[in-house]
Amino acid sequence: MIHSISKIRVRYAETDRMDVVYHSNYLVWFETARIQMLDEIGIPYREIESRGLFLPVLTVSAAFRSPARFDDHLDVHLYMKARPRARMHFEYEVLRDGELLATGQSSHGFMDRQGKGQRPPADLMAKIEAAWCEGGPVKD
Amino acid sequence: MIHSISKIRVRYAETDRMDVVYHSNYLVWFETARIQMLDEIGIPYREIESRGLFLPVLTVSAAFRSPARFDDHLDVHLYMKARPRARMHFEYEVLRDGELLATGQSSHGFMDRQGKGQRPPADLMAKIEAAWCEGGPVKD
Amino acid sequence: MIHSISKIRVRYAETDRMDVVYHSNYLVWFETARIQMLDEIGIPYREIESRGLFLPVLTVSAAFRSPARFDDHLDVHLYMKARPRARMHFEYEVLRDGELLATGQSSHGFMDRQGKGQRPPADLMAKIEAAWCEGGPVKD
Amino acid sequence: MIHSISKIRVRYAETDRMDVVYHSNYLVWFETARIQMLDEIGIPYREIESRGLFLPVLTVSAAFRSPARFDDHLDVHLYMKARPRARMHFEYEVLRDGELLATGQSSHGFMDRQGKGQRPPADLMAKIEAAWCEGGPVKD
Image (cartoon, rainbow over all chains, first blue to last red; front, top):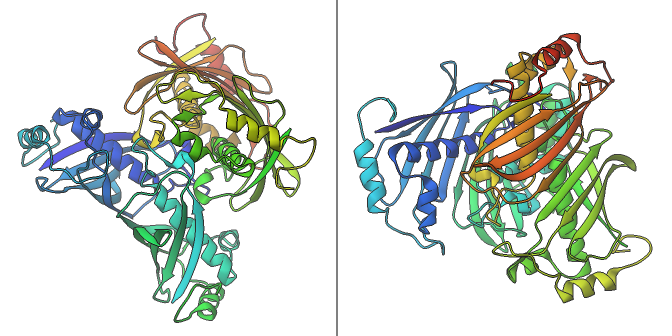
């Protein structure tokens, strides 16, 4: 498993008139978590794209238990529980002071600039393998 | 079933550096489709909220087949296939010139301003019943 | 002068916890107005970019008098009061039922894909000249 | 003068198809800078709003010199060069590795929940006075 924790502070722009975070913003935070995990295992997403390889979102879902609000400090946990093959799968948990606010999942493919499917690159697979563990976050 | 079609024209701000629509914007369009469906059956969402009743998103998901791009004219189809009980369920299809680009689902509760669960209001249920049909969009 | 009017319906995602439209969204609407004006004079922005020419925002400003709110139907007036030379200048007014809610301005350059300054293209200048008038909106 | 520096890392969602940050996002970062400055001087904006006092944006402007891009690490400098009276004025500079990418300004009023103008609260004025200095950032 790979486990990474990223920190989010809720922006005013992310709230809506219900005085909670507008739900689509959680998907942006999920991406922030993916970017940070790739940093932590040593292969920044910007580098991946600079080679002409892209990881588009194929599916995404979220379930909302309790609302996040303006200025909240949140922990976004990312879990990769299966090694990537044709696709990568991530699970997410959004917590505030240990309280679970939302969960989510996403899956991603590997494509070139023309949208043609690609195999996962060997160095990404090696970095994932090196970071794979049974327990805590990557940085622990 | 209730079926409604709303029109979206992709904004520049909705694109990302992959030259496609950033995925979280589909969730905003799903909401646009819900708002329009409620208009079409005769009970605007703004009126519902003005009574202190809110329809928060409980779950949402989307699957992306082919990217939408800047300036595309899209049809967002909304389907309600089961009458609401404690929750409302919607399905979505995003099409460009008849080509299916993405699908989605969402479920919603009924809450008061304090976040306490509520029953669906009788007039909303009556409007849904009146608009219920076997076939085409509400406005046909 | 060129004058164009575009229609905006305020999305839920555009509101914030103050129960008004979050201010940065007006800039997105200004862009919607520019896109529509270019459509109306016969040279869609998508076509301009497809030749490798871009019109980046160099400066933008807005002044807010009265808030727009969820579900408002707004008119965004765009005015081009001087023929473009090295730059294009636009002025904006956002109205709801005739009430002026906000004003704005933006200026834009002409650049190639590498960010190098370009002259305004002759066909754009010709379309602007053809649409130039003393009075009402382009489509009148 | 009050001077505060906040850190931004550019999100994928903030880019557009021109492969740069979409311009309206700078306004969101300006707000992030205001929130952080209020934190640093000891009067968080969330606390101000919790008393029913709001600081709406009255005017905002930005000038763009060089584009910010995905994953950039930016410094957003905020300057308050005059003590607030009926309004507060801020100036902004967005830098990447010391290079100035954009500048901006905003002005803000003080209003109650009904939109009625208010005087700046005494404790905010006192905090600003205490943090006032000739030179470097608040936290130095």
